[in-house]
Every structure is written in C-alpha cells, then in structure tokens.
Image 1 (cartoon, rainbow, N blue to C red):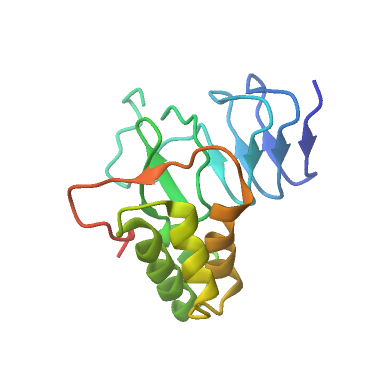
Image 2: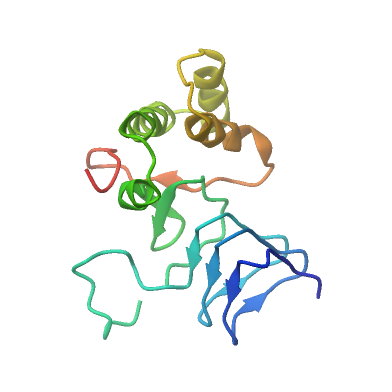
Length: 163
C-alpha cells in the first residue's frame, strides 16, 4: 500500500488508508478513519476526529460516512452532506475578513442555485468576481475532479457556518 504523507501530517496508529492516498501538510487522520483508495486529505483537515461543535458531548458516538469528494474549506456531516464553510477554522488560520467573506460569496454562488455545480462554479470563476487564492481554489475544485461532489444541505438557509 503506497501512501504519500507530508512529514508534518499526523496519521494515528489504527487509521486505515487505501492505496494512493495523499495526506497533505498539517492534516490529521485519526485512528477512527477509514479512507478508500486515492483519497486526498488537504492541509489542516481533520479526518475521523470529534465534531468541531462546542456543544458536542465527547461521550457520544459519532464519525460521518463520506463517499463523495468534499470541497475545500467546508464541513461535512452524516452521509456526504456539506453543512457550510468552516468559518471558525478559517479565522483561526488568520485569513483576512475580506477573504472569508469572499469564500462565503463563492460558497453561496455554487450552492444556492439548482443545477450542475461544475458549470455554476466555472461560470463564477470566469466572472472575475473572485480575487483571493482561497475563493479561486474553492471554485477551481469543482472543475478538477471526475467523481461526484458532496452537496450542501437544502431546506434551511444555505449559509456559511460559524457566522
């Protein structure tokens, strides 16, 4: 099994990683995680950890099942369901307020309209309305892969989490 892990990545004993997985800088894969072949864990991501909800009771058995690609800077729950941007994490990383606001705008641009997410993201990117590398990276994600992409929750407001 070939796994490419950055030297600063943490992979706990007991984690199961499929062939061809890539774990980028400062990412954490806990002992509870099971990753399929070819999974990429991006910088600063935590896979298999407790939810980043201050009200979460650690005594509760929890860990989401994700089988679709997950856009950068987002949080996923349950079964392949995006719940919003990880705004708290973005702020902890020291991103400027303007960058966080632009990411929120990009998130809404892709997730509010009904339609093909790849086409919607490509149009948003081509509009020239997004200047930050983070917002551009978020939008570019949708055109890069071939697999299905996790979608944001419907029903309530599709807003960025942590506002």
